[in-house]
Length: 418
Image (tube, rainbow, N blue to C red):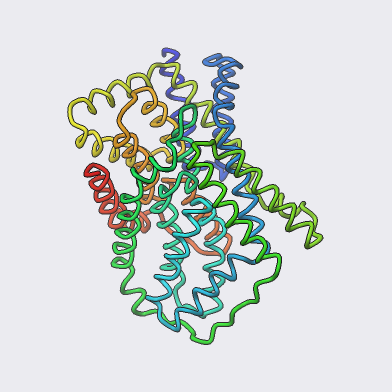
């Protein structure tokens, strides 16, 4: 077996381990194990490992800042308050509650990333449903899963995968990003809502919601955390507009906001720091190393040549083929490694914005097909398990096929028209 074949085998097994979690080991263990095996078999050297890890530096800072802000808001009860407000405004209507949860999910995903929607909003929605004596909370929880991906390319900050795709390259300035993705994002959000509502219409028609839902008081610390989130969103939008890397501003905003809130409330930072999912960092780092090793085999160069050739023949066909291919691969191996490979190919091929945009839409929206498609959906499943709930892979796939495919087709068509 050649070195390239061994590298691809290790990369494939690593992706399989991340997706299926054998022995219930965390995803990060499989990513780090794959990188370690590549180094142990001398398929890559220490310099290559460092090169791969260092490419994710901006992503690590972004994730740490966002996780700090999300955990702070969760601990202070901000998301519980928002979910309770939505439930009280539903006024006993399951359909209105479904819409309100969807709108909240859009806002959280756009300005706090899809992982925040999965990790923080999901348990808050479940708590609000329980307080409202909802008969079946699953339709509203499914909103959290699907909107986390459907709205994840409105802004660069809406999904860490957006940063991963452009790691080692140049993130488009905000003005160009909005020109490329605003209309496809709107289509994705609207079509996903319509399809998800249609799938769940019977469950919503049979559901009941209490009208007399109490609203928890918003504490001063929660209000301060909310202002910190708003300030952070404005800072990041400004950084995107000035074409500045998002990692350092996100990290700084998260640290400063956390310090201020904890100092004013005289709380120890230990619990906040402990609540962060630190395993995400070695997971992403390990995947960066895997991609660095695969790049050495020439696979990325081959993909970039095919992508450039397809773009030269027909841009519209290239948009459709690239978007669909990446969407399917994202569900097979998870969108983080798929985004890393696709991003490397896009940067090497120097394709037009429309084709690069199709790849990003495939990475962000495509994972709505399966429970293993994105890190956000995996985190959503973990949040359900903590509440004693279960969502079967086949059940999710049936819903995902009806919801994701129309949204992906129409979003890519909108991108091609633009």
